[in-house]
Amino acid sequence: MFVSSAHAASTTETIVAQTDTHGAAGTAAPAAPDAHATETHTETGVAHEKAVFPPFDTTHFASQVLWLALTFAAFYLFLSRVILPRLGGIIETRRDRIATDLDQAARMKQDSDEALAAYEQELADAKKKAGSIAQTAQDEAKAKSDSEMAKITAELEQKLSEAEASIAAIKDKAMKEVGTIAEDTATEIVNKIIGGNVDKASVSAAVKAVRG
Image (cartoon, rainbow, N blue to C red):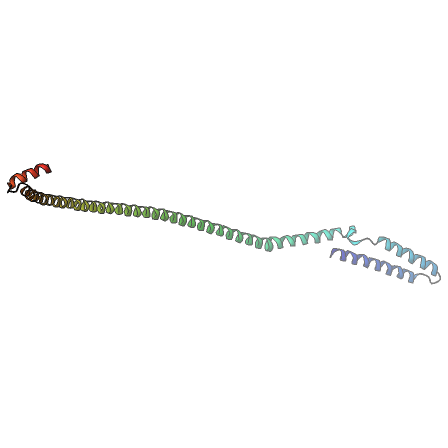
């Protein structure tokens, strides 16, 4: 914008200089055409020598600096009033959201740790209870087994005693019968040998003496 203004001003000065040159040539005497051409050419050359690149034209530095200051001030106001507050709001919102997410993550981690600790405690209690139940069942089974074994042993001992008593009774009965048979047989044998009657008491005493 500053360059265009300076360039337009320089162009205007050039046109004015050329117009003044032509005007001066028109008012000169028509009898000297060569002098008119020489003067016009000389003034045009001077005008061309005065035409400078607008940004480097020192005559426009003050206006350029003014416009630069105004533009910078407007840009600064725009940044400070519009852009920076919006950026600050966005950054603050993101900071709050991140803080909220971190707090939520911390709470979730704490809840997870507490749940894990409770689960481990319940698992330990369950294992302990299961071990106690198993030990109790084992002790009860062992006690019941010992009781049954003692009962069976007592029954076997009783039956064995009864069997021994029965065997002893049978043996005594058999021995008595054998003694009687032996006495009768011995009596008959002696009677046949001696050809007479033998005292049964004597034969019984002799058989008992032999049996011991």
